[in-house]
Image 1 (cartoon, rainbow, N blue to C red):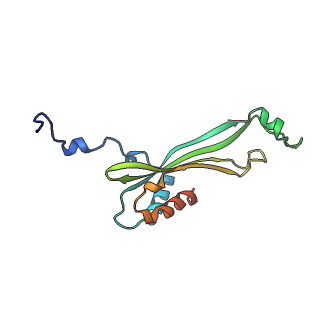
Image 2: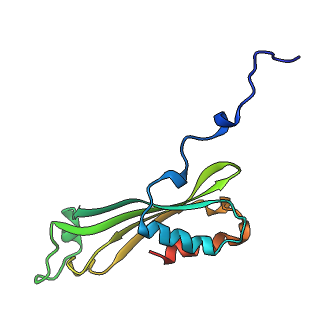
Length: 149
């Protein structure tokens, strides 16, 4: 039995409106993308690295923190601490779909931060690098994302 009312999909319908490559580029993302691509063999599916957030924040220090972790009297904890927050994403086209493989979120504290955070970088990440192609280059892509920022 055939359904005569069924339409065949056209190439234009199969194209997706959004892709990771269309996100805004930056010098940082271009540099990291080039480094990650250098670890991949020729003919690998397209890869896109994008800096999706880059903000200056003033992090509020909750009242229990100074009470619990007593700072020296000469260096009391401030009510707010400034930092730079960044979110960096690695995506790859797998079987025609863009797959988000890795997200790295950092908080960077500069020299003007309180002594407990001065010069520190806190990193959180989510990865699904197991879906990257080819399998043999997963670790290299993951390491470049960690090392480049």
